[in-house]
Image (cartoon, rainbow, N blue to C red; front, side, top):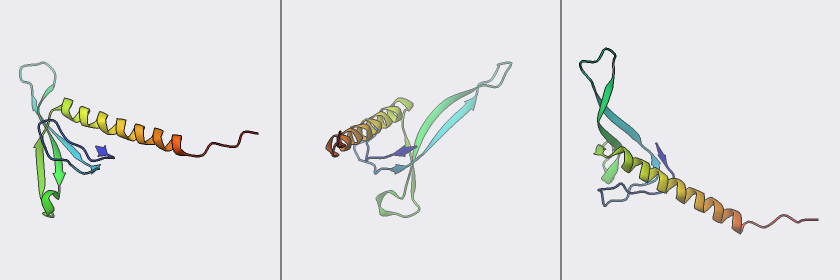
Length: 95
């Protein structure tokens, strides 16, 4: 998952830097069915090298809806900055 802007996650107060993040999902097999099916039991965002400690990795519990909200905000910021850039660029000479 890639964030192009610094972002926050619901339930946390710190701001995470833009960059690439891994999402780790824990799932368990649902017993008693005639086919294989899994249920998600937890979702984590993997945060590397946080706090100035090289090699340190944190698995931060997060809801799927929280991740989607953070991604939506990031896309909106990207879209808004692209729109602003277009408005500030010179117009083509119409002849």
